[in-house]
Image (cartoon, rainbow, N blue to C red; front, side):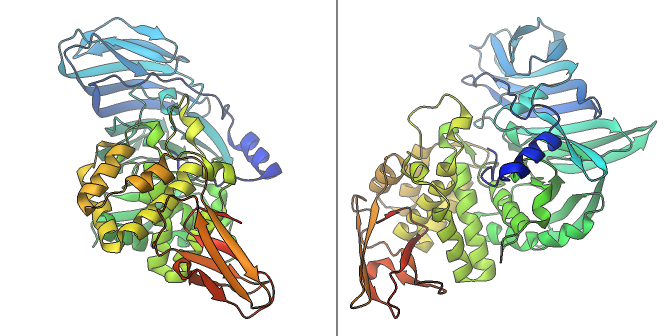
Length: 523
């Protein structure tokens, strides 16, 4: 899914970026068909010619697809604004079947692995956008949740990751960045042809490209030199690369926790888009203005980059089985960002991230089921619930299981479900199997339950004593060693163990109390 959607510009600034940065309608969408049972797109090979000024493209996409022998028609998602010129199955022309944004491909019920070629061209209604950066035009894709169907035929659902081989032919004045690893780049006859290869499967919504005038800054390497790093910046912005100078350290931190980085390289791409970031496989896009925008003590673009980096393991490698399971992508990306900062900058840095994680979610989002009972539109699940509540549930699981069991279990789940869809029920079963613990209570209250447990606080000004109790949690927090952040007036505040039940303070002012990483309604 798209990461960091909650990082938005506010008010007039958001409106200006929306109007100037997206010349196509940013809210236009496609309605890609749902996945079919037994269909598995193994590889997507795209050879496309792009005209950036016209926002037009065309070419051929070949899909290597495993299909069951009971399937007569393979149904792919492709924007009906595009004209399909020809469709072939294993080199044999077949009838072109169109129904809105669905493209039907007769496969004859033979079963096995087939190669489907689709030749098409046109101007997409969604998924391909133009942004204006200082002195230049940048054209880029935005694929989430199924807007990749605006320019790429395929199965547009997280449960069907695919490998990607993308060749893009553009005017020579444009540079190209894309998902995967840069395999070749040549210029001739006024055109540039660039090829990018993704060596491991990832959801189609992480397939992306951007063309513009870019400066590339090599960022060294991570994983003992095995993973080259680079930063693709808008022309004239190469000095901003230093804001991402700890990318290698963050990657190594995550690899130590989760296992080897899934892809052959990692790049960041500066793009004038309206959301903070998108976890495109091996090459996340980061919003251009974040490179110069910070809150006190924070590096905004670094935080978004870490979030997108986590997605390379959780979301891109381990994929949600359904849009309803989106928290299994966004929850880890949110929570493990805090863990990276804890390991890089110290315990209190991690704690501050956890305090913000629960502070920056409204009561309505916090009280909502983490896994919706039903879902009509993937966009309906995109809220602070899957980000912040998802992260808070992982923190609770960690405290419940203990560090050793939690990290062992999380790593084993990632290993078992690499390149495979993971449902919430399967995640619970896998954690229980790996740790030997019954987690049904935690999942019943915090994942499938509605409402929000309360932290009831009492302040005795005479004795300067703060005390508290938790209610409505079904006993899931009994003995769990979570912390509270307590502050009086404008003081720095302190972290205290919630299991203590009370604390004496020095000042006479009534304190503010915030849970550290645990979602509670403070009363």
